[in-house]
Image (cartoon, rainbow, N blue to C red; front, top):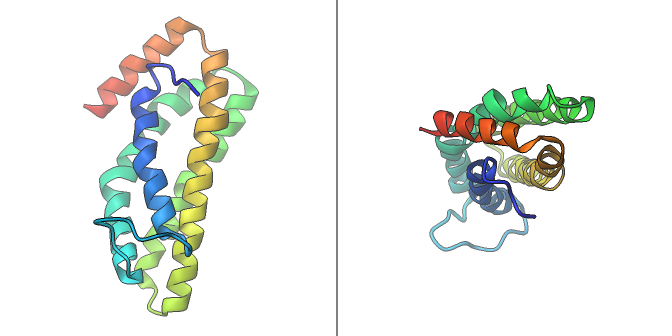
Length: 152
């Protein structure tokens, strides 16, 4: 899936999201330099939410999703679903703070990891692909400038 240069910076950020998603899942292998305990994984994903996910979500919502909603009904619906998933992920991650039972924490970490992985794959494989197909090059170039402004 070749990503248009306008979407490439946002798409590259998905790599760390996929790694984090995998880390949270129950059958995840140990990753060098990554936490292995449930508490460590919880603390890691809470920091990840603040440092990477929230800024990433903001860029998508203030640029890509706004533009997508003007292109077609299908892209509007997808943008709405993806934005709803952003709120679900934020809530799931923030709710991890109040969990003390290890089995419940393990289940919630797994659920969060699965949703994050599915969300990123949906954006990459369906949403970004359709957006690239439907947007004329001039709109993609405008989007590139908007994304660059929000990233800096």
